[in-house]
Length: 177
Image 1: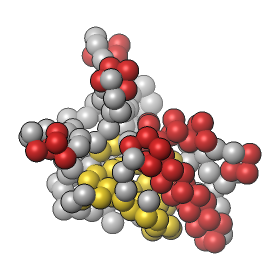
Image 2 (image 1 turned 90 degrees about the vertical axis):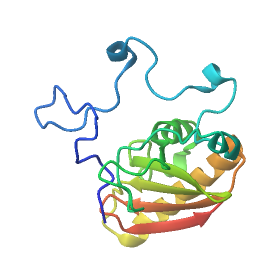
Image 3 (image 1 turned 45 degrees about the horizontal axis):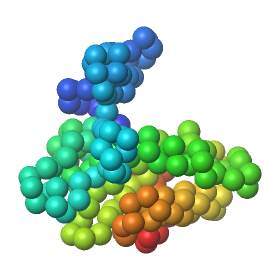
């Protein structure tokens, strides 16, 4: 299973103050002198996210992703996957409950990728499980899948299928929303 993290030089800024040389993330507003990242709801007057059928028909393919997630893309990934990690983590921050303590957290979500296949959405979440017990990891993954489904229905009103994977690539839970 290919890694979800960028390993090839795909034009990403990999400079960091960290001596490990790890991925430094997308440029900040300060680094670009302007708005970094995709537009927000405030900037567009609507929901920022993957393009709709209408946008795709107009030729807007959307931004490329920074990782090949096993769909035949090159070392820098396929242009039809969208990184929704930051948005999903923000949703989690508002919707995790006391019962989620110790099982899932915003920080346990490593990546969230979404694409549209025909008329349905497809999503892949990579998360770090704190459990060594497979059953507990699968329960935590199912909780993330349910939260993701709630988020997509609430914010985007779409339908699709989400799979939650371990950082090693093992599918722990799959859910249709």
